[in-house]
Image (tube, rainbow, N blue to C red; front, side):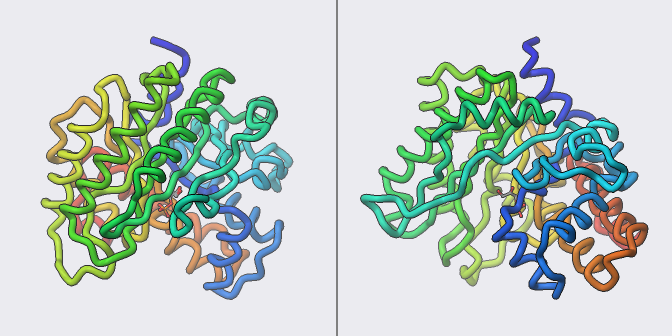
Length: 336
Ligand code: 13P
């Protein structure tokens, strides 16, 4: 078993998943504005440290994705943030892309940037304690999108990023996110997501990536958020499994889904059903941002000194997601 495979399994095994706390300062400002808390380095750290020091970290969280600002901050307990996370048994990770910009040649689409001087930045993050990384490519859906250009160029960037990350001894999370925006059907989402993921693996293979040492972070297969069709969780699970079975090589140890705008309960229920029906060898877990933090953030914003109350809400959410990662969740447990 390679070192990279060991790290990936440490993050994903035993019903654990990933806390995506890597919102950029711009995104975090939007999240904090929405609950009327000023976005400054102190408040961003206070909220995040509240989660990282919650008791639920030990049992339910195998990895935490950090943002550049956070990995360089010092916790209230004077530990580095990486030490704080490692002390819970979770692996510290870092977002290394520098965001999605307009794709020249197809200006309604985006390309993720951040390859320039990435090798040097990775060495620094490794020294700061990171052992895995994240890079997110985004794809719009319409009759003509994602274009071949977007599918090709984002896959190429994800592969070049992955090669540099593995060279530096870390596990790359490969995140191709087919966005939920639009009125498209779940079948369209399935077709486009499969095409996107297949291209990613074509490029990863070309770049000699050790597939046992990556984590795939895809979207679930859902209708667009402006579609008037309802979909049952069972259907989401079956389509998502179909997509992954036809597009992901079996060497990949696991899949950690993004929540992508689903509510906390939807994201939990759908993950649970994916695990109930899972007939693949992939570990299927969560790498949620909003679906792990939303309720905790709302509660915290009412009294940012109420650490214990906020942690209780986060622990519950993380517990629900962990049960879903084992196919053991039920709606009745939400009320407890
Ligand atoms: P959401 O779960 O809020 O979609 O965030 C996950 C993530 O890391 C997006 O890149």
